[in-house]
Amino acid sequence: MSVLVTGGAGYIGSHMVLGLLDRGEEVVVLDNLVTGFDWLVSPGAVLVRGDIADGALVERLVGEHGIEAIVHFAGSIVVPESVSDPLGYYLNNTVKTRELIAAAVSAGVPHMIFSSTAAVYGMAGLEPVAETTPLSPQSPYGRSKLMSEMMLEDASRAHPLRYAALRYFNVAGGDPAGRSGQSSRGATHLIKVAVETALGKRDHMAIFGDDYPTPDGTAVRDYIHVSDLIAAHLAALDHLRGGGESLVANVGYGRGYSVKEVLDVVESVHGQALDIRRGPRRAGDPACIVANADLIRGRLGWAPAHDDLPTIVEHALAWERHLMRRNAG
Image 1 (cartoon, one colour):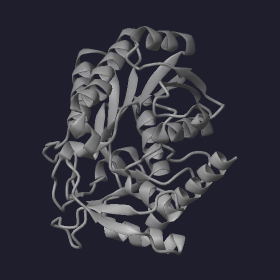
Image 2 (cartoon, rainbow, N blue to C red; image 1 turned 120 degrees about the vertical axis):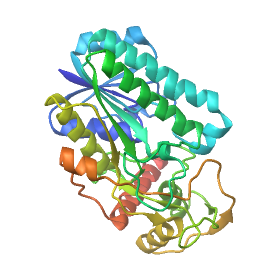
Image 3 (cartoon, rainbow, N blue to C red; image 1 turned 90 degrees about the horizontal axis):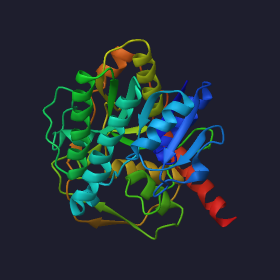
């Protein structure tokens, strides 16, 4: 039996592949390689280039490889881009996820783990958000993910498919062993942009809004190490395999850092000041979003191992240096 990882040639997906392989699982990756990289996929996995909306392909892979779980990462993830291209986001994140779910149901796959987002909560305020917090996504990105959660919930009621929808907060860092990291070009994630600036790949960076109703005026986020996020996926997979019911769970540390605080840590770890400029707020960005992760800690026994912002930054910097050496060679 094996696990199908969609989007496994991307940032988080490639770490999931490593996490599965590290514990002896058989892994198949399905990725169209539009934003992913074939070289990010561990040679221990089978890489298939294709689209998650190709139901015939998905069903064939299920049959050929004995796939009993799908971990679904494939999709588009940039909030401001979703505001300018909503239909593209509904296609990639909602329509294609519907086709993937349909193929899973048709092929009899019993378990699915879905990459959701804290963006489903919208303008949540300064208090940590629990899974019971009212949902009010402010961007097509958040809405497209919420629609997919709703489809999974309805499909699981009508068919023998159990699922876990994990609502990520801000994922950062890289594999501690240096095997993978965030490699996308033109990234918009704060820590990725900051380490690129620190290493001279960008001549400056911007703070998008310094007039939010937060302690220092900049947006506050809950930053989680990618390896801890993968540990949450593995725990969710074990939960479903053990007969556990479907669940929706936040994955974050429960502590927020402002943009200015993050940049202070990057400067401290790197040892040099960054050229930081003021920019306007970005469409769809809430002032603050921090997780209440009591559910996943209590129900699945998830215990993060890298809950330390300087460590997250160190791993991000190490991966960025690796990319520079790789591209130079």
